[in-house]
Amino acid sequence: MQKRVIYDREGHAHYVTFSCYKRRRLLDAYKAKQIVIEVLNSELVKSNGKCAGLVVMPDHVHAVLWFSESDQLSKFMKQWKQHSSVKIKKLMKNDLPNYFSTTSEQDPVWQPRYYSFNIFSMNKLQEKISYMHENPVRAGLVAHPGDWAFSSAAFYLSGKSVGVPIESPG
Image 1 (cartoon, rainbow, N blue to C red):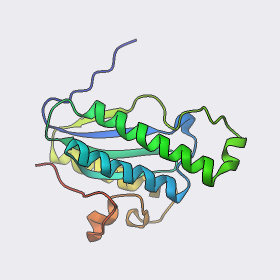
Image 2 (cartoon, helix red, strand yellow):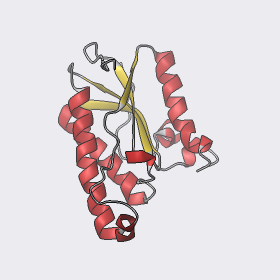
Image 3 (cartoon, helix red, strand yellow):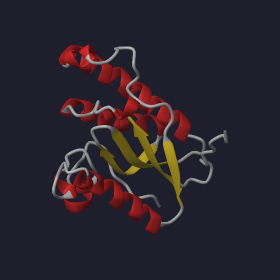
Image 4 (cartoon, rainbow, N blue to C red):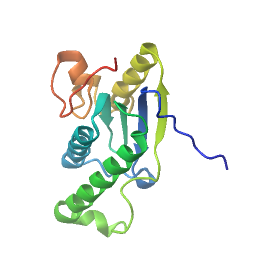
C-alpha cells in the first residue's frame, strides 16, 4: 500500500474532507454541526490558521484552510477532529441517549485520516469552494447554497457571519 503524502510546506491552501465513522449521520443534530464549526474556529485561533470556506454536512465536512507556518495541517486536523469528537460524544450521551442504543459508545465519531488537496491557483480555489457550497443542494437538503446554515456560502453571498472568519488566501 502506498503511503499518503501531504504537502504542507509551500503555504498553499488545503481543501480538506473528512467523514463520520462508517458515514453515519452523526452531524444531523443542529448542535453537532455547531460543535464542528466552534471547534474549527478555536483551533484556527490556536494555530494562526485561516479558513476560505467550509460546509458541514450530516455525515462529512469540507473546508479550505491555510496556515502562516509550514507543517501545520496534520496537527491541526488531529486537534480539530479530536476536540470535536469529545464534544459530539458528550452531546450524544447527554442529549441524544437513544443514539447509543443502535451503536456502540466506543465507536469513533470520525473515520481515521482525512483527504487533503493542495490548492495552487485562484481558479482551483473557486472550483473547490463552489463544489463545497453546492454539496447541500446536491444532497437535497436545501434549494440554494446560501440556505444551508452550516456553510460559508452565506458569507460569500451576503457577508453573513458563519461562526468562522472567512478569508481568501493571499
